[in-house]
Image 1 (tube, rainbow, N blue to C red):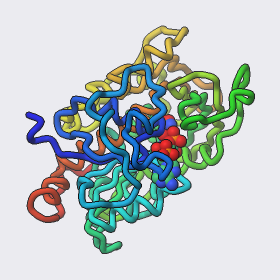
Image 2: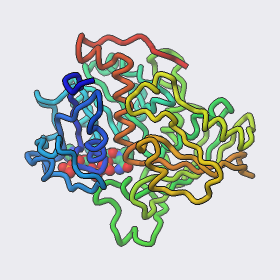
Image 3: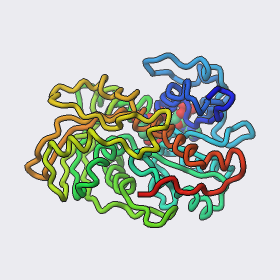
Length: 370
Ligand code: NAP
């Protein structure tokens, strides 16, 4: 597809840790072109190159460096599709204002994830939940919509658990080791972080439990609110002194009591839904299983599938719950920017954007329902 056919897109929270990852991730995307940036009053009026304190390994894309940063309010220039990576203390109200003004907002913030009429989507796991968009627009009477992706640790956990659904997931105990980039910039004070592991991340444990159950939940009626999965999830979350990548150590109780070899086989064979394989940024193997590796290489493994695959290793018997494993995901790519872009690809492929961008909104027919 040539650049002429790319949808221009906006980005709220463009200057932050996740915003910067969006700028990198969207560079060269075949369907979307970053054309509008928003952030706080601190940054508004500056060019992106001056507003963003760039902390990425790769240089700032030339195409965005000269873009002006605008206040985080809908304006005539703002494209219909807007990614959002704003601080949660302000994201809720701003995202609603954009949806009310007719924008599709793809949010990384926690504010609306658990609203019954807001889709919380991982395309390989629950693509059918995107149909909640129609319900939301009718309920709220707004021409736009809010679509969310789970938080970074939940995405890693849910992708590792998704292949195990046929075995019947009952209970999950999970301990996370989460990188400092997960706390945004400047994040955790160096005096707290150096030589330390902090056994507390505000709100994270509850998010992992509730979001995992919503993502794994069932949409009994097409486009209607989701019934959360009856899975008990208990989480311990820790901040550790790594830059990127969240490691998730999970023990899982499965009704069918499969052997570790059967679990490994199910994970390695998992592809998500067939439709998603056609998405430009979907990894061919969303879950990558390493065999016999007892010395993980976080920097390499977190970047599997351009940072969009989750790497699982050490699948073994758990004397308490049955099976246990570790899973590693890139928190600002698979856990944030890449997750939102994949959701935008799902919206476009499902006809939601076509309806809105070209010929007025109509609910597209379901592409597939489980
Ligand atoms: P961050 O580095 O602190 O960036 C926050 C962004 O919000 C900045 O662009 C900031 O703009 C903007 N902002 C702050 N106040 C604002 C206001 N009043 N109006 C408009 N914009 C405002 O945080 P982050 O790590 O990128 O996280 C962004 C969101 O994604 C959070 O909700 C976070 O929970 C979520 N998330 C983060 C991760 C991760 O791994 N980091 C993963 C998943 C989800 P200025 O620079 O102008 O202040």
